[in-house]
Image (tube, rainbow, N blue to C red):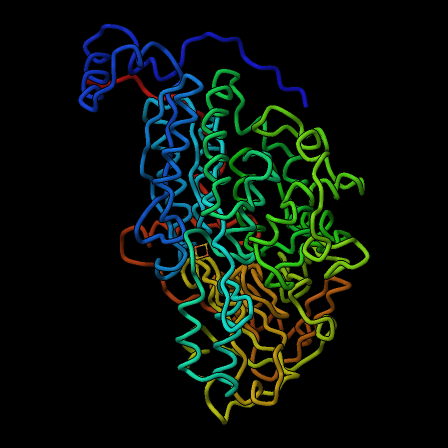
Length: 580
Ligand code: FES
């Protein structure tokens, strides 16, 4: 931690717009005054953009306008000038073909919004899955001081005395319907219990994981991740963050000061300890690329391998985010990593302190929610990175959500060429499949789907479910919802649509998976593998125009974070002079 605060006072970049008496200064200042701002607000104080992903079509972020008012209060109190700015909001539950197709677009829009406007620092008001990484990516590429405030998770859902975990319960109940264990009427009644307050998914899904990643990276104030969306303390957190960003701007404490290699290593270990989503792998690598840090899949495997999963939350465990907050939340987990010698304690956070200073006094109030290490859900809880002739550039699996009995498995491949082929075949009684088979789904990667949808945890065939079987080995180039579970190999790279070996798997091939030895092998002779690869021809899936064409042409593979090739890196905050 070598950060040295900048001298204050000094000229802010917003003064390029609002300072002085030129025609252009009067133009920028005068027009803003139509909102009723007094002249002294333009005296050189930090102008803070509250980048708000509120949208009525992003229900997980539906309360962020109220939260923005508390952020504003904090900014005013600290002597800043808050301006709320709506930004692209990639909602997980509405965007088609998948919100992931729009993460990079949102990041691009945020980056340009920050750079092109009179903003000295930003509060990133986020929540739903993609909103968190996209805003951090955009802010990182401008490297203007920024702090993350998440909307917080929903309260627990309850149905007939049982916890209803966002997403997790939906997947479970839909499998129960197929297995004949639940009626449609009960399913519809359960729907009413799934989302009972404002906030993001209440499981340790991708939204909670990315909120935890933001905190572990040091980009949010300590304790931010777990406070429920409707808890008064969420609003207090927003106000504190508003106060803090003003001082961060004065100190010139930038994303590149916070998101160092040490910070990413801390975040990877935290992800293992919380049983976080596999989506964190892709998002953290993309964020790292924006600050010039070469984070690889091997870092995930190496750093996460010996991390026990101690947070007993769905989908890996039993409880939900509300209970995680009451137990002490993420500071307790980070403290445990520090005590185990698995934390870079000096890593700087947006508070201006090292991460250890923030968590060293945290207490665990419920040892059934945040477990002792010897009672961990999985002793090797980090993301396992598998390699072999089926995944030369890697594939990932989440051990804490998988079945121990399937971690070393050899089975006959049942192949689905794409998601439509899967949907058509999976319900057929004459599909030649049983629980020992390996389900293989192709063409669901970043370019193939397009956008890399969360379909990797494909549902099991009804005839297998009816036997009471709940898990099978599944392999794809897709992603999986952070709320999902199962022995599911994801992000297989290179993806099928780019001619990766996944593309040439055929029905009846034998596949071997050995998670302990990180091996994923297609058991056919090497010469046969090469003959099939040589014969493979790409389908012409390039869209004729528009964003979809841009996405097709520029999205990179999952193994590096699926960012656009031309967006990797930090382009700073300089802009050409005004042209009015
Ligand atoms: Fe938005 Fe889960 S769908 S947080």
